[in-house]
Image (tube, rainbow, N blue to C red):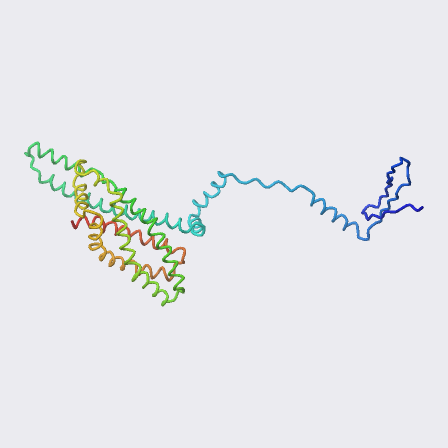
Amino acid sequence: KKTPIIRIASCHGIPLRLKRPSSSGASSSPYVVRFNRPTTSNTGCKKRLASNDAHHRAPPPPPPQPSSSSSSSSSLPSILHSPLQWYIHKLDTHPLMTKGITSGLISGSGDLLCQYIISSKKEKEEEGEGGNKRHNTNTTATAATNHDTTNNDNDVDKPQSFDWLRTARFTILGSFLVAPVVHVWYGHLMRSIPGGGVSSVAKRLFCDQGLFAPIFTATFISCLTVLEHVIPDENENDGDGGGGGDDTNAMSAVHNHHGDVYTHLTTRLRNDLPEALVVGWSMWVPSMAFMFAFVPGKFQVLFSNGVGFVWNAYLSWRTHEGEEGGS
């Protein structure tokens, strides 16, 4: 009886002898295992063995993730050293939120600028009046007159404080009204009337300043008026018992003169809207013509907010100081 031969291809060709198990316990003839060398070269076998080892080898551990402190520290230099690139990146990743924050800051800053200019002007006027009073005061005046003059001097030297609630109202409108509406409107204009030619720019300018500007200016003044009644000034809440002086009485007189929200709103729209539109067209028409012709789409809200810094300062004066001076 011939011994069965099992042929197994291997890269090594080392013969092995295997015994066949027997149920009777007697030893049987072993199998002869003959290893034939493969026809391929040893280089191919080594490559296959290496690939098998790499397949069964455990994967390398993942690289350590950077901590939150290290990631924040790595993003901090980008804000400090290249704020423009950081802002452009935020416009791409979070456009509406970035424009809302920017618009709110610019609107509030415009109101602060208006308050600072008006406050400085009033201080100069009061200083001039106080100097004239001191120059004309008789040296033989009574003690009561001297006491009144001292009080006037103290009022002149008193620093002018800012109306932070008024600034907060402009900031809220800039973030939650101006930025979203202008973002959607400019995007719609650029999609509906594409191109950078003269005719395209003229069409966008007409739609923006001829149709959109009157409606949006009236909307802004209306929302500002409603916010003034929802979030009233501290001077109005204090009334006459706080001893606020002439400015407090003047502001209270303005609010008491207009009465409820509807009366205040209609009076303000009738008195302030026409002049605001005329001044706005003189400022916005050349600015928007330049913007529609040369400014990319994602920077248009930022550009309009830059022009709006001056515009909001004017609106703050028109709706507060101008209104107060006309009452």
